[in-house]
Image 1 (cartoon, rainbow, N blue to C red):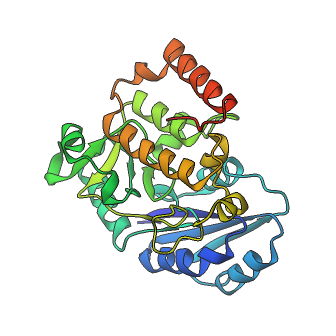
Image 2: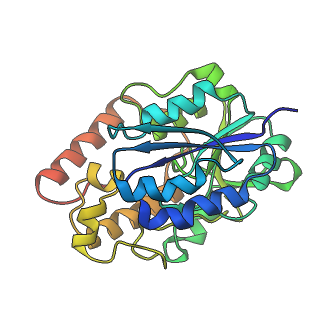
Length: 281
C-alpha cells in the first residue's frame, strides 16, 4: 500500500519545546507514516535535543543546514522527495492532537476533492461560534469543515497529488498563497470540525509557552510576528486574535485575494508598520 503520510518538522533554536513537540508528533504516527527532520542553524542545545531521535525508526530522514534557510527549502525537500499519499508539516513549537492523522486521512478518503485540511490552534476565547457556523459545511460520511481558502502551515494534511499538479512553493510564495492555488485548482480547504486542536506553544496563552514577557518574545520572535511588525506581547496577542477572526470571516471567493485587493491590503500593512503598529491579516 505504500506510505500514508510524510511529515516534516523544521527546527531552529527550539530546545525549550522539542522535548514536548517531537515526541508528541512521533506518538501520533501510524506504521505507514514517517517524520522528516530538518534543522536550521548551529544552536547546540537544539542539536542535542534532536540527537536521541535521529535514529528513531519513525524518523525517515534528517538534514542539517548550517544556515537558517527558514521554511521553503525544507518544505520543498519533503514535497519533491516524498512518495507518500499525503504530505504535512508540524512546527517545532506545536503539539498536535492524538489521532489527528487518522481523522484527516478518513476525511480525505471519503472526500477526494478535499485539498488542505488543518488543525485549529486558537483557544476558545478566539472562537466566535456564530461566525464559524456560517462557514461550516458537512461533506460525505458526515465529515465537516469550517471552510477557508487557507489553513495554518502546521498540523495540516494535503494530498501529494496537488504537488504533482501544481509544483512546489514559488520563490516568494507563502504557504497561504499555495493553499489559495490549491483552492483555485478545485481543492476544498478548511479546518476540521469538531476542531482538531493544536497547542501553539509560542502563543502566550499556552500552558507550555516560553513567551511571557516582551524580552522573551524578542528572543524567540515567531516568523509571522516578525513579518508583521510585532514588538510586544500585547502586539502578538492582538495579531493572534485578529488571525482567528479573519479565519472565521474571510471570503471563500478566490478572486478576493487577487489583483488590486491584494495590493491594497499590502499597502495598508506597510503603513501600519511605518507608524509602529503591527500589520493586520
